[in-house]
Length: 309
Image (cartoon, rainbow, N blue to C red; front, side):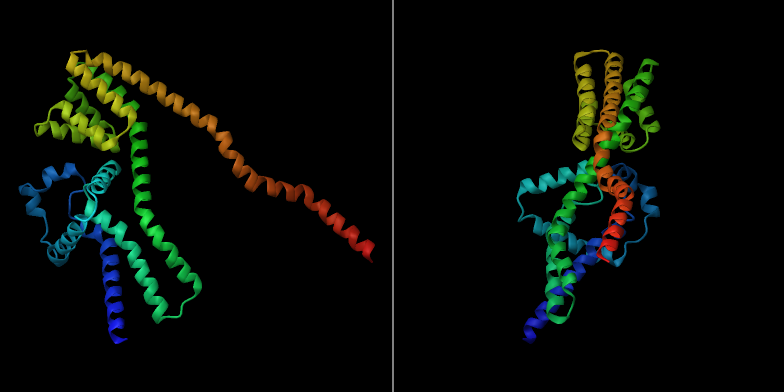
């Protein structure tokens, strides 16, 4: 019995340690570059000069933790690891959250809550509600990382779609004013804020370190996977291959983006009345029924009371 107690105690300690380490990973990475763009200047002379000395956790604990997760990853299907890596990149957090860390959170967190439930059930008398919450957290902790990635990716792609028409207009104006495509892209990256501007800056950096324009633009499609942006990049690559004027291609693409943005706005306007039906039924109609029928019900109750006397 005493041996079982120590085994459970050790398992709970390991679960608490993993739980603490998972939630404190952003704090451990606060000195790391925020994105892949920052990596180009993070390890230069100036970056090393101002980089603080690593802490005990960064020198000892994190390497052991990453080694453990890398060993765990070897037992997983290769397709799963590649799929998660691509999804992290599409969500824009592939530079900060590694595949090993994400898979560790996804597969170990349910065991953490199971061990917590087991430990609490044996050694403490807790309400049934708390046990039900812990039981519910087991599947939720497994599904939540995927839901977070999906929502993060959707938000990022929506931001790119909203910024793309303005970016194409500015790019078209710059090219027609006499700038080369690369210089015009640099101007757009400097003036367009948000995810699209950062991605254009990354394209420029990749071209500066030796990648061709076609390779840098294709990498952009892999990192974003936005249909409108993919169409634009494909048109630019084909124009570059066949020698077509980029200015004409940009003008056509900018016009199509404006039409699509107007159509999307009209579509949202058409959907608005349908979306208002359910809030109206749930909140407005009950209050209206109380106001209209309430006095009649009170009157009927008074009449019935008088008749009963």
